[in-house]
Length: 359
Figure 1 (tube, rainbow, N blue to C red):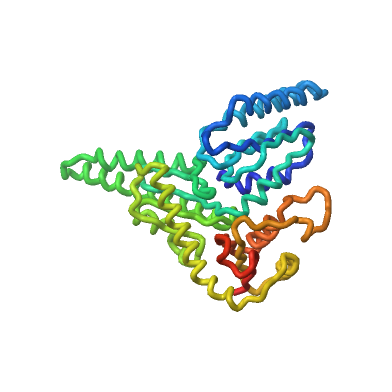
Figure 2: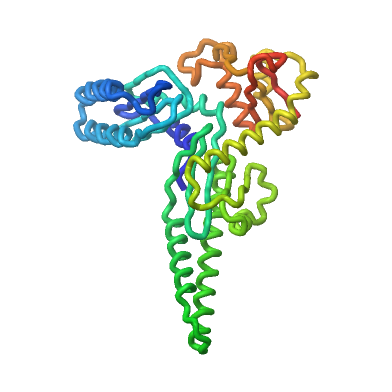
């Protein structure tokens, strides 16, 4: 299975130094859905200068090929947001993230993707699947957008076998001769076995994203199929089933269902925890940071005022190479890693700009 982007970025940040590495943050202005030719030309010029200085021609060509591949992945996107490009002689990634950074291009021997990694903790990342017996479509949801995820060969093969078995049932003879009845019975049995295999593969994939990727899963499609895929998953809090969604639904319609679900989920959590803030004592960022370092009896809930920030040095001191310059990013990341919840509220709604609850 293809990992979601948060995992991909985390893996990028863990990559060892390369002989040549490029990391570019290319923001999209509000009035545009594509990067300007001038921006891409500036990126290519800087990359070419680095390539010309590289002593190994083979690695230099591999780097150029990977950069071309990454640039080829750039498509139209709904701003505001930023394209992050990462390229080395052995790696190429192009990801659209729903955050706006200043334009930066780094060329050296290591990737500089930590800011993207920590900023991504601020938003919700989910795995979305639309499943029917005719097709299956996968997406990764980052914020308010869905990004297609390619299907693995196992799913394509199971879906192909199911379609062939269904065709055999439909082509079964209409007469009632013993031979025809036997053929029909065998066709129905093959169809049932293909459907069970298809369902089990989808089930294993849902469990992969729930447990291995540790992201919420939203499963859409035919109710009977969703019931088979989610059998014995009643305790999976991060799994949401939305039935009755036609398999031909556009990405925009699927996005609206995801947005409605996430908004409802957010409202439920806010109604559950917000009243307790009136009884909570004020805590400094350092006190919250210290508390989060300990093993906690329950998953923490962090409330943050939108737009609030403070220097990361308040938490980690003036060290070089901090993963983020914003201390809020560090707190949010730590809460997420502990399985907690982060809720951003408009200015004026919180007694303090930063408040931690331990339900």
